[in-house]
Image (cartoon, rainbow, N blue to C red; front, side, top):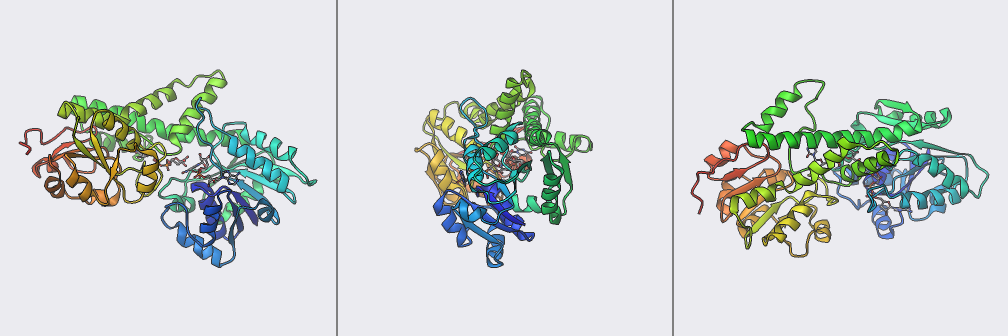
Length: 440
Ligand SMILES: NC(=O)C1=CN([C@@H]2O[C@H](COP(=O)(O)OP(=O)(O)OC[C@H]3O[C@@H](n4cnc5c(N)ncnc54)[C@H](O)[C@@H]3O)[C@@H](O)[C@H]2O)C=CC1
Ligand SMILES: O=C(O)[C@H]1O[C@H](OP(=O)(O)OP(=O)(O)OC[C@H]2O[C@@H](n3ccc(=O)[nH]c3=O)[C@H](O)[C@@H]2O)[C@H](O)[C@@H](O)[C@@H]1O
């Protein structure tokens, strides 16, 4: 198949590369000329393990190309994927600005009967709107079908998830369109679930909202564990043995971040509001998450009284490991709160530092290694469980920090062992250890 993919962010680029890998001819379009230039040379504009190798291989095979020019991309295209951003508007709803521009551009440039596939996460009803926009802008006498094909990949493991995902959802109102998109996806060898367009759109929001709920639920339990002397790791291990609950996505921490859970929960709450069906549970999930992002700062204030003049090492800035994405990272809230409390902040991230500089307060300093960050600091907070951060030994923290006090937002260490190694260790939903240590 000849496929055009519009938008080459985390979803569009990975989709385009993966579709070319399974044998399709793919042209990816982006309005960002610098990005297009880089991609044409086989360089990925985002950090995503395994992506660049696949990009290079398929460019060499002549199955993958990049352009900023719609004419070029639509000369042969039979199917057009939309993978542009749907960020959050100030009122919490999904901003469909980019979708609208793309739908109009597709309308103006299609040369033949075309199936327009929406990969972007969009509110229920948007695919109908996309069809109207495309049809309103048509120059050629062609037939347009729309298909909702939501994406479930996770950043940091996007390539792996695309080839090993749990399901591919295809929402279509035409048998021909559903069958064509199914055929395109058959080589992935994944379960395919076909439904109507509105249900497919809802599957995406419901899935993200459910996962966000799981995280806020477990974070609330972890805060109770903290107060009542239980251990969250043991609790979730015991809960997860029940197959109805499942043992995945039960890690307590400093709240969910990223480009999707925060905006998608908010969009679903707004969608529910507009439908006259307020989603109280999801509102609570969002409030719990906001509170959870501040937990480590609260713990530090409790421990030190005042943070005025203290220097804090923030280890890990991206919203999760293996990505350079800083969107809605908890580190943003934490750095802001620490600075408000009068603390100095030195951040370290193996990959996301350049993006971090664009969104963290200007007062934040940056280190090139955990060692450099810790040696400058009074105490440290672990925010992202990158491998190189988890590889730091407790002895190293003890040697590097002025006061060996560690606030671990990702439960990377064993609390008893931390105390044995001379660290006062505050983690999530587990008892603080080393409180009796005399710290220098
Ligand atoms: N990031 C993720 O892990 C996932 C994202 N999604 C959804 O996929 C959609 C895209 O998300 P990301 O890939 O993160 O977005 P992104 O913000 O990383 O990338 C969007 C790309 O679209 C380009 N673009 C904007 N307007 C354009 C136009 N008129 N023509 C051509 N290109 C244009 C931008 O230059 C940018 O490169 C969103 O709806 C998101 O909710 C779904 C699943 C996972
Ligand atoms: O729609 C999207 O964009 C994507 O959103 C999430 O993927 P992503 O945001 O990339 O990353 P996750 O691994 O889900 O992590 C999200 C946040 O939740 C946090 N998290 C995750 C799991 C957990 O058990 N505990 C926890 O606090 C992570 O630290 C991170 O901040 C979903 O997992 C994907 O299925 C979905 O496609």
